Length: 237
Image (cartoon, rainbow, N blue to C red):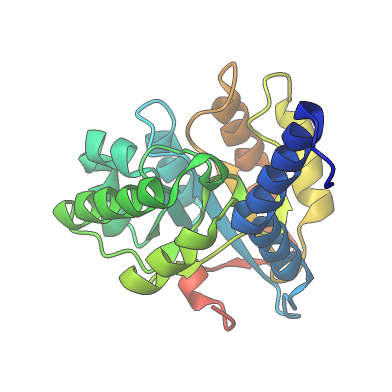
């Protein structure tokens, strides 16, 4: 006579199966993508790629654009589609001042928490909004770098290229100071680095501290001979 599984055993197996499914669906693809990007060659040129996520923000993005204009820096903005729709004037200004505009999802939901249908709808709505704003994104940065299996089919469908980062300064943290942000940027960035900062969201006015750090850091980078490029000027994208 075969053994009858206890209720606890069945629940354990179900939990293990769910965990394995989640790992295959999102965790492993996300982790592998981050590892690949961080280990990929950055080049030896004295070039930095400034990128900004989570905007546009009425409170911070205009000032950020002022700073970039002051120093003649072009950057890449990965915008949240709903935020872009709320601030079309900032999108127009990005375009007019020569910045690249990429996509950073509809409303900043992690792909680990999205169903396949939810992922497809996120991309569909995002691309419709961007089209209405006169933007045709080529580059996509997933929130937190998280993807799932449906993300890849959506990237192919819309002709998008995934872009991650080499350097973060944790500039979204509630208690971080502008000095800490600057220290991390100067210590972590080097030739060919893709730097990810945030002009939206953040805790306790964190983007304002990022802006103050950037005002001090860009001149130092320029003195060190760095040039600034957009993501579409990288050789390997």
